[in-house]
Length: 530
Figure (cartoon, one colour):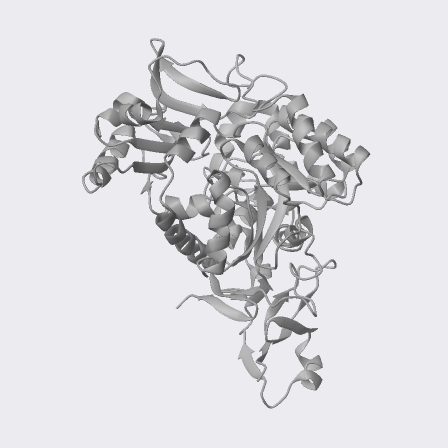
C-alpha cells in the first residue's frame, strides 16, 4: 500500500520561484502531492493518511550542496584532524599519537591546518614532520587542500630529491635552496593522489560522509572531484552499495591531472546527463588556479599582502580553450575551478568560445567565482553562466581576505551583484574545505561576517529566503533538475528536512545554530536527531 503522510501546523518554506510559505504538505511515497494551507488539505486526505504535527517548526526542501568533495570528507574523517590546532608543536603531538598505532608501510595523514591560525604563523616543514617519524610517510594538508606538507619518507617514496624544478601549475617550498616538504597546487595534488587511501577506506569514508551530510539536511551533492580516474567507479560503488544516500551530480575532472582525466572521459563517451537520479554525470571540470585563502588564486593585480605574488595558473588560455571547447562540442556542460579574477576571466573566454560554437542552453558554470569584479560580472551575464559561490568561506577565511585582497574583498563572492544582474546563483560548501552545514553558509551570506566578527563586502549581502533558494532551487537549476527537486512543489521528489525551529522567525545571529531534526530522501527518513 502506498504510504501517504501529511505534515501540518508548520512553516513550509517552499523555495519556489515566488518564495511562498504555507503551513501544510502532503506526500505519497516518493512524491509531493500537495502543498498549501491546512484548511485546503481535507479533500486530499484519507483514513490511511499519517498525520505529523510540525508544531510550528520549519520544513524546507532538502539542501543541494552545489560544490562538495564527498570522497575527501569521508577520508578526512579517517585522518588526523588538525582543523583546530593552535601550533605546530600541537600538530606534531597528535600526529605522533597516530603514528604510534600505524603499521609499517602505511601513511600517517593529517588535514585541515591553517598556517594563519598557528602560533608560528607559518606552514610546517619536512623537518617538523621528520620529528614525528622518519620511518612512516606523513602528509598533512592545509585547510584549503591546495597546499600540503610531507616528511622526508614521503618524498623518498614519491621520488623527490632535495632539488627539483617547479612544474607548471605548482611550486615547491624551499629552505637554503633545498626542498622543505611544502607542496603547492599541482605538486600537492599529485602527492595527495599518490598517498590516497585504500578502496576499503574510501568506501568506509563514503558511509561516514553521507551520514554526516544527512545530519545537516543535505539531500543532493554536486561532487567536485576526488582521486583521479578511480574516483568515478568508486562513487558508483558507493551509491550502488548504499554507502552514499545523497543524489550525486558528478563533476568530471580530478584534483590531480584534471586535464588528462577529463580528456579520458570525453574520449570514453561520457557526457552531461548520463545516469539516473542518484548518480548523474555533470559538467566537465578543470582546475584553472589556486585557492582564495592560501592565497594562490590567480589575480590580475598582485596580492595586497604581497606585491610580488599574483597566484598560480594550472594551464594556458590555449590549453583551456582546446579541452573545454572539445568537452562542450561533446555535449558537456563545462565549468572550472576559477577563484581569482584572472582565473575567472580565462574561464569566461572559454565559455564565450563554447557558446559561440555550440549553443547557450548548456548552463555553463563557474566553480567558486570568488573574485568576480564588476567587469567580470558583466561578462558572466553575457554568457549566462551559473556562478557556484561558497559563502561559508567568508566566515572561515574572511579575515585573510581583507589582508590579501584589500579593496577587492568588497567583491568577493558577490552574491548580491550577481543576483541583481539576473543570474541564478547556487551555493556550495566546498566541504571539507569548510563545514557542510548550510546554515553557516546561509549566515555568512546574510551577515558577511567572519569568525571574528569583521565584515567582508557588506554590499553583497542577500536575504534569508534568497540564501535558502541558492542552497536548494538554484542548485537544482545548476544540474538541469529544477523540474524534479529543489523546492516544495507538487509532483517533485519528496526530498525535504524538518528543523528545530521556525527559521523565518529566528534572529539572524542564531541562524548558524539551527539544527535539522529529520532529513527525508524520496519520502524516507535518512536522518533523525534523537
